Length: 151
Image 1: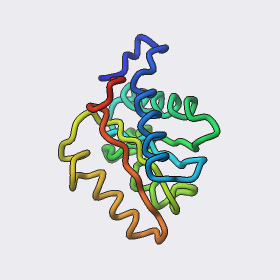
Image 2: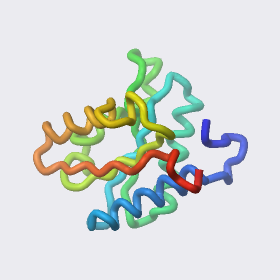
Image 3: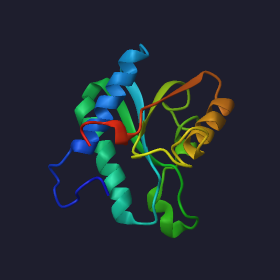
């Protein structure tokens, strides 16, 4: 895990995500406050989901009034016992106000590309489907964390 759960003051990954969101928002001329979804793979572990939530809280704190921030999982296991991994990206982007129209920034809590976060991967497919369901929805995806000097 990139986040040291034993060091609550270590906000490197959250800072990297917040910096990527701001760079993307400014580069694309997006209107503030931004609507930001911090997305990770999703997990059957409450501890991993807590890290995702911590990252989103850090991003929200760093961006302050410049953004509305929510955490989401790309996927989760079926069953009520795994409901703690909600909300799913597919239910947030294109499905839940204020993330269902206009510009939405997806902050990728993924280190490297692969079948989930790479070109044509699961996240891209979920966002394509969301744009197909929601007229006027525009998604903007941050670079992956592996390229950040902060991580």
